[in-house]
Length: 150
Image (cartoon, helix red, strand yellow):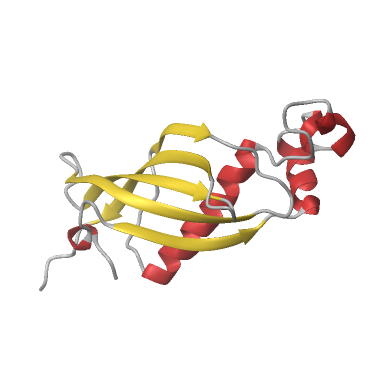
């Protein structure tokens, strides 16, 4: 299990592979972000997107899926997140794109009020298959400190 004490500031990681499908773009948009350029090529052609594009919120959800799969692979003692900072959508994500993530641990500290957990701050960048950054955010994370040996 990977605990707070195992984390090293400055550590970078690359992970994930997510293939964006037209069906998923339309399904997500229909439920959560039904703006016309996320629902049809015709509507999107009249915008700066030029064609059907994924919602930024969908891009964030795809990145979250990759992050959770990576945490499972790493066997992290993660406890969730109190939120994100500086979420930016840099380029449109289109059906047919393949996404991946890169992260860097920026800082960590033990919680003053809950010393059994640490607080982390890390930058995530999501890239498409052309190695173009499509989204960035700073994630604030919570992770267990190593249990005392008995």
